[in-house]
Length: 277
Image 1: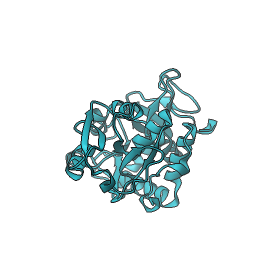
Image 2: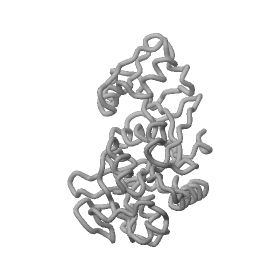
Image 3: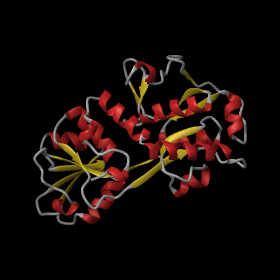
Image 4: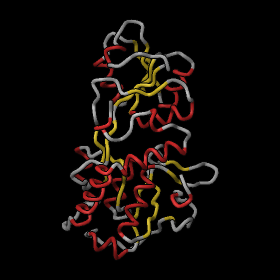
């Protein structure tokens, strides 16, 4: 990523960005209130490629970081990072500590606590990390005796594929990293995770290839915002992400980040379901 798009630094200001400190709550969290505050408070929880904090420089990068910067620029305010965790992010939005949390899936429980735009931020799907010479094109190609599938224990991918691939043998791991390590060691024939996570794994190991087997199941993700009697900020976010997705700008942000990780973005599936082959 170029200098003008360097990510947030946890320790203070860098390229016009700063770490969040407590501010007075605006309650309604309307568009006018966000502008009056002069800051867009962007929640960030480690999850590459959405949010990545370099352990040495403590510099933040990722798709969510860049979208936050562009959103703040259009609002005419300062983008400010609010470090959080995925389990705590909803509470942070409710407490008016976070204005936006990107890549937050709008499940039923979250919808009861916070608000979401009407349109998706982008899409992801169950992907498969397979050997470079694999000819597999469908999930059924993996559904055979003796074929070893690596999944992360207890995930949605685990649940769905266990039902789908009844003839395959499953190896379940405590983390995504462990599952991919088993693939590298050839203890499993394929690893399945949501495809952006797999792409980042591939960027580290440079072994095999990431595919979206058919039938492809597109899963929309979104942006969490505070519930408010005044929906003006939510509606503004809805308009912003809709235009960014339709114009291909969101996909370009993803491609730029992949390139910074040494991955050819044309070699892997992107975030626009309309472009999935």
